[in-house]
Image 1 (cartoon, helix red, strand yellow):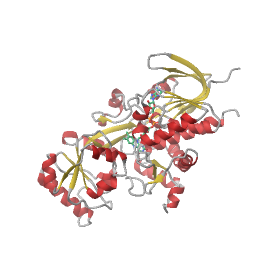
Image 2: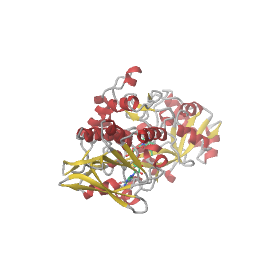
Image 3: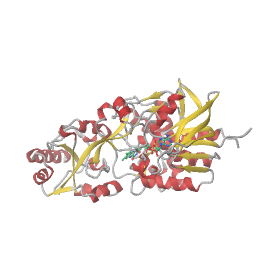
Image 4: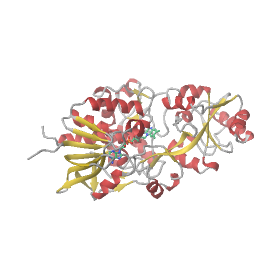
Length: 455
Ligand SMILES: Cc1cc2nc3c(=O)[nH]c(=O)nc-3n(C[C@H](O)[C@H](O)[C@H](O)COP(=O)(O)OP(=O)(O)OC[C@H]3O[C@@H](n4cnc5c(N)ncnc54)[C@H](O)[C@@H]3O)c2cc1C
């Protein structure tokens, strides 16, 4: 009998590339397809800040950081109010150190631990990243490795249209070029790594009404294909109301300014010049809070010290280069330049400074230890955005897609195609939950697929 064309077909060349590399390393033959000819500059992995959370790593050990998968899990639990899928969260937390170690050692990715600031909700420094802190560099590295691997074929543009099963097991796929030329291939396993449904405005309106009016800042091919393909096979879905929002997208350059601005001591004011919520709750939930303010937009206010600290981010430098940083010697001068009420901004910045110096409680209840802003000030216009959806196909600890609670043999999902570990809504999103599910579930899927590949 003829064998399959490939041991594993992966739809989506974002986090899915980790599965390709891991499965091929373990002996599998792999086909990766991507619907987007320009995926390297267009998918979410290429757009991201490349923060990969991992607990109990050698980088943490070298920096004297105390951490463990249990502690990571406890942070996920706290951020989601105990609503995240426990099985998936545990599997990802427990394999996170192995994932970053493999990325560094087997894939020669030059990783470093972020110790200069910490995202809200993490109780330890556990974000691992690369120089420039940009996903395009991470993705380029993975693509180069994939292209060089003799057991992996990568084709783009090519879309996954359907997954076929025989006696309930995955047996093949239908793939198609953009002009509609379709082809059937035989395979034992399929990984759906096609991200979520952020680009489908109808689905977003249905499931995420609170952020549906905001700008969508994510891959244009995140059209919910995994949901459709999975549902055709009877797959379970979950957490479809979960998403990652962001309140720090530059409205001028449409580039991420980054929450490090806030963590280092920046504050956010609305179009009246007033602060309105504790910025350190998290950037994801802050998007809907900002969207509900007058005019649905606002300003991040920082100073030159914070500007310098944030310049390690490619994205922040791009925002600065776009001319989006508005500077003024005083709060009043800044207010006039950005068109907010001068008395309000002057009063807010003076109060925020006293609070940061420990002289009075913060008006919005912020308790973080932060740098007090000082003149001259810098304001950057921000607009709330939806970055990606966090719900999808229900998977188990091996990233196997479930139908009525049992695995569909040979079908896997990762990243935005699968359920995340962010609970419901926007508030459970902990920085790194996007990549840990994209890279981590891909890694786990590959190991499971490879364990069934005949030697
Ligand atoms: C600005 C920004 C910053 C971020 N920063 C971080 C961060 O620092 N840390 C973090 O954890 N998360 C971050 N995220 C979230 C993170 O980028 C995503 O969660 C993650 O990259 C999703 O990976 P993925 O593999 O699921 O999807 P993607 O990387 O979007 O890849 C999916 C691919 O599937 C392809 N595709 C879609 N449909 C089909 C089909 N039918 N057939 C074939 N191919 C198809 C698409 O073209 C795409 O290339 C950020 C997001 C944004 C927008």
